Image (cartoon, rainbow, N blue to C red; front, side, top):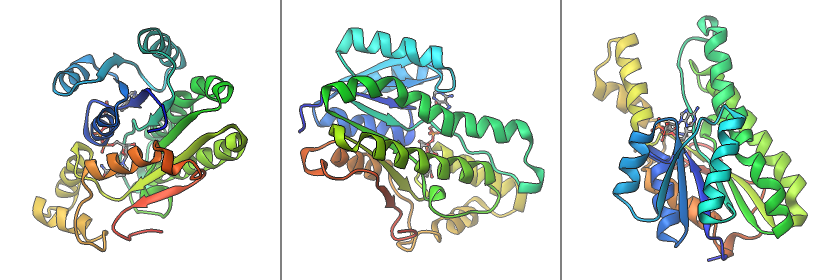
Length: 252
Ligand code: NAD
């Protein structure tokens, strides 16, 4: 591996983030995981070695600054940042509240920017580092009933491209991964909402979402972890500015 030793994964206590944290720990890195509540983070850290929990809210710059301070004091400079924390709220566009619109943009887009910004100067000075945004196929195409989510994820792809252009000469790579539906709690919440709004059974709701993937299945969190691990390896040093679809061919 690249000599990268310390990774930060936001939302690393659950779902996709936890699988990414495991993949990077398996690659030999110490992994700081953050989320808003310590309980889930501590449980995740207890079940896997090399994971280190720190509570932080990605929408709060001061909270992220203190996370960096503590993590870098304890484990050295952060040289991999995975901006994974995210939320999804569904409603017809005509009924989306301003509060839900702002909250989604705040966590998914501004939160992603606040997560990576403190790492930039150090990575550029060391001429080494990896930044990975966990976007979504919703960053590459439109879906109904999730307008704030789709807008935020398209924004994340734009942010990734801007940073990749700005950092290309520094040896730091910046990429996004774009999973289709991944089998996590976020997906279960979507299934519950579909059941509630349409009267379909949970199996029918799941089948409808699964049909988006031409391979006819849900993506597993470990598959996302494995792509992120590769993006942090020596072999991917020339890969920057890319939005990698992990969707069984739903988008490309
Ligand atoms: P999840 O709900 O299991 O995890 C989301 C994580 O983000 C949680 O750990 C939560 O604590 C954290 N989080 C939320 N708001 C936060 C905040 N303000 N500050 C710090 N942490 C915060 O969902 P998941 O499916 O694991 O999603 C992880 C990422 O993957 C998200 O960005 C999501 O948009 C993306 N994604 C998920 C799917 C899917 O189908 N599950 C598909 C494509 C992309």
